Amino acid sequence: MSVARRLEQLTREFGKHDQIEEVKSWFAQEVELPLLDYEQDAEREFSQVHDAKADENMNRYSRRQAASSSASSTMNALLPPSDRSKTSEEYLDSNDIPPGKIILLDATRRENQELKLQLDELHKQMKNDQSQVEECLSEFVEDIKRYEGLYNEASEKVSIIPISKMKNEFAVEQVKEVERERDEVMRKLDELQSLCRTITDERDSALREATLLQGELKNLSADGNDCLAEERRKLEVDRLEAEKYKLRKEREELRLKVEELQRSLSGQSVPNDSVPSASGCSKHGHLLTERETLEQLVESNLTASTLTSPIEIAEVLQNPHVRGAFAFLSKPLLDEICELTRVVESLSIVLKHS
Image 1 (spheres, rainbow, N blue to C red):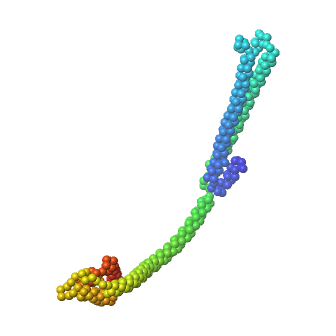
Image 2: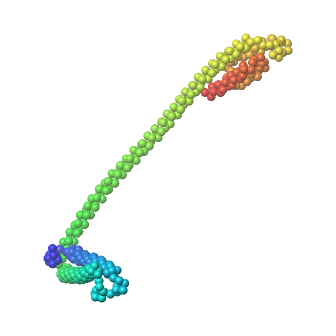
Image 3: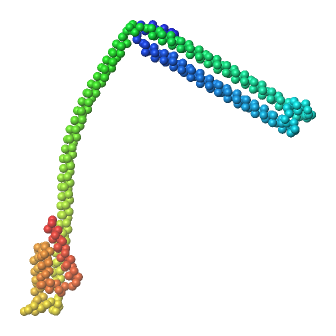
């Protein structure tokens, strides 16, 4: 749609709708921005074309100049040193040139003429390019002036429209739109409040369940501690029963060893000078008395399992009759009796604690 037709359409619609801002935005988008873009594109295209053509012409001119210099250098190299400052025509007129050199000089002359013609052609082409660019710039200026005129005409048409003739239908529509948005916001607010209440109820329920679970966890922990204590007590009882069984077994072994010791004491012969004599008794009679005393002590205490205290064992060993009775025993047998005494002492301590 052209600018004029769009302006006529908007002018007809101004009596029905309030569209001043729309006209302004439309002109800004459809007129001002395209003008700026067109101006920038034209300047950029002109600079690119001009720079490219200028670079190309300079490169071609440089190549031609280099070729001409090379040809002149070649021709001067063929001439004698005294004639190098002369031109080709002067040299040809004043010297007898060999046929080969004349041909070469003619070729160089023709090449220089061709280079000059090409250089002239480049200058003409640069002038043509410059004229085309100037023509494009003139068209661009004309377009800008035309768009400026259209814009000024539209601005005048918009400014002469009385504000009193504009109706408030647009404002009423805006109010309705705001009311609809308000109703939508209130509806979403109600949904959020309902969701908050639901979340609060779920949180309270979760807290109650967590409290119940915490109480159950405490009960389970207490039950676990009780079970653990009971298992430990059972393990301790089992251990003590095992110790008790072990002690009973060792006690039975001790009793058997004591009986064996008793039998060995009753059947062993003792020399007369090994036992100290007592007043009013013979050595043999005193030995029998000590042996009988030892047998009585063993039978009444050890075999009857009443001698369980280390104090009682120590008192028995401190008895002079018992010590005298042990005097005739051999060293290994005395060591065994001491070991049995220590075992009995440890057994008595364990039994006392169990």
